[in-house]
Length: 219
Image (cartoon, rainbow, N blue to C red; front, top):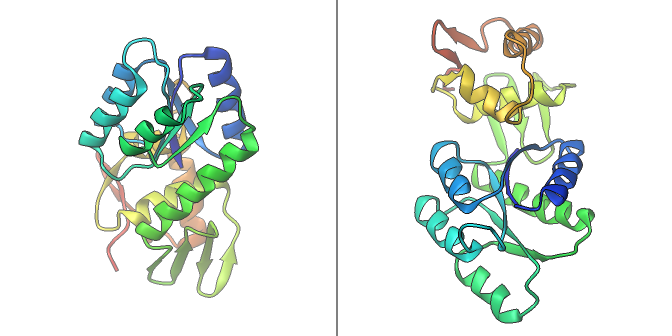
């Protein structure tokens, strides 16, 4: 699950990124509204955490412009504004939820789990292709009735490919779903994940499209 964190307080952002990483999220961070809108236009995340007090554009205006680009992506507002009118304005402008600063990270995790369940239900919880069944709600993969133990990043690669069955996903698209910006990625890391998945699922389950990327055939 990829999160875009829009927060200009670097200390808070660093703490949130560390906490979210430990929960298994891929987190990319920007400090301004313009940067957030650019990312959402070019590399849409699964969830956006948006601070209202940004240095260049008010968070409410960012939210309104964001909604014109993406009407369905879950947005969680972070706000130090205590007035109920500000919270109502945020929800009326398209936010799905909000947290008032200061907050406990455990509450943030709980709000994100709600978003994840919503996303999974929209995309259909179970994806079945051949003998492989992936359940996004339980983060499990079953092959011919047997539960497979997959490391998190192998699971994320498989989930991305199965959700897009019939489409070719490029190397850059898959890596963007696995790693934060700036995170060191060795040249063959993705190939290693694909190799391990093929050993577990069969050599022909994931196809290599030479010079382009990878795909799983539609059922």
